[in-house]
Image 1 (cartoon, one colour):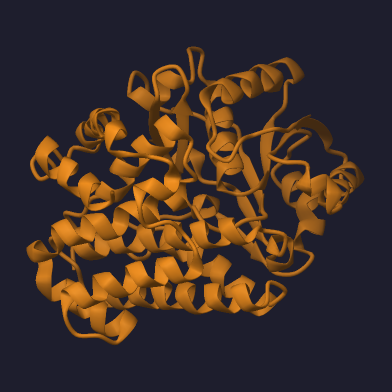
Image 2: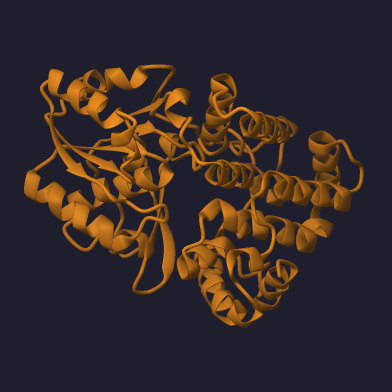
Length: 382
């Protein structure tokens, strides 16, 4: 176990009807005017917007509405929202939606407090020194953004999909009500499952120091995602399964499964970001394509851990059998495993490779992931 400091100040409010307390949670942080960010009109059709706006009003909090955030959040939208937030002089940002909305909310909150262009924070030209407080009501579980510092945004002009991370970006309060997630479409449920799995298997397989405790935690998260995804495909109204899936997604990326590990990296994310930046691929769908392709290339570097995964997650013995079992499961639940399923062909590989290598350099992984290696992984996914 490596030395570590673990700090996570986000307060999670988990349970049915917790969203009806959102005004009180903001008032406890002295919020007077909030920018409410959301994606589709689903939150209005299902009545959540009315519940939230009513509760905010009852607690004396003014609301400024900003909708239309896309499932792959883009820089232009973040910039527009920053201008609205500044003009309206809000003192907090509330995300009502999934991880894409929350990622945008974090970028908006940091960008409002920064005097330059918010993209500077993504490319390392300036650190995040302050941020408006961020709150969230989750309607789709996948990214774990509700309890971490990360936010990912795509610059449409440069075709770069990059991230920020700062202690200033921890949400103050995040609400997880499984009932609010029952409207998630089938395809986004299975994409989310792949996303959650990716968050734990990358440190699980790549860490140079990986305590058994953390391996057990990772396997538990994966097993829970597999079980609850299958349960929800059978019965989308299964609130208990929805709740376990949502909490597994949070635990996958709130720091617990890699605190005490060392020397790990996120190659699947680095490569997938090229797919979603160039082709607007849903992040989880891109990951379910890249993960098996990467595993086939990488497994000989950590055979014992791949054998452990095969046995403890899928009940098979060999590393290759475990990889095949995961790919089979992705196919079974209906998330893609081939680039062709995303509309990406061999002729697109040079552009994907160039973009992915930029991410590899930003992630600091050039020592392992040469251009030849990344091309091999991509060809494994054809």
